[in-house]
Length: 206
Image (tube, rainbow, N blue to C red; front, side, top):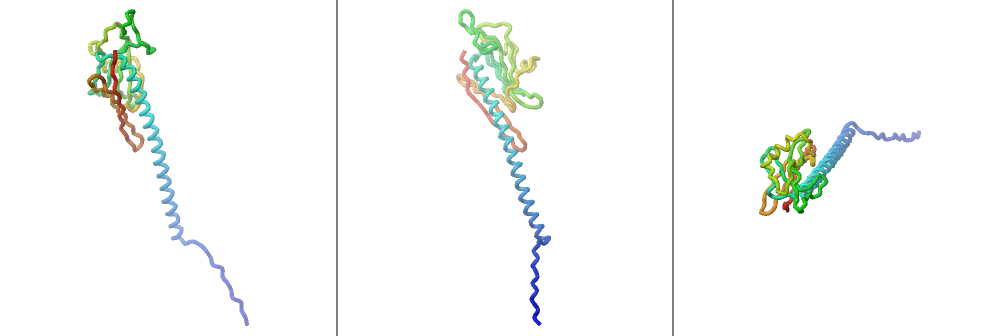
């Protein structure tokens, strides 16, 4: 008798070993993607913080330069060795920023301004304080003779202006006919840390 051949369908499937290998590969890919996303997010926040600190430092240094340019060497006091380094100088400008002159056209020194590094709410930054002189004259005042050093300004009850966060150092170097001002800012974002220096040269002209 003739018996037809029986064809059995092949069964396709995966063994446990194959499934484990696939799961391992997928896990490696997911971990790699997660690390890449984390690095990208950390870099974004770090770059944002870096740009913000640098921008604030440049703006503060620009404002300091404009005000210090209107001062005179005789009215500039600096101290780089204090725990809170800074600079004090006299200004012939009023509250609006306009130069003040007497009837003879001479500049009238109206106020003392101080920039110094301090810690506010646990964050280091650049502070600015000022006070109006009770006796205003055309003779440039000496901050040291008036007892208006950096410590004096820090202890003033009037609130200061927080100019820039992240500033950890303010140093001044006397050149032949100018002052070199350097601000040091530090960025610590996550596992990333960076120190930057921003400096300028200023010539007090009055």
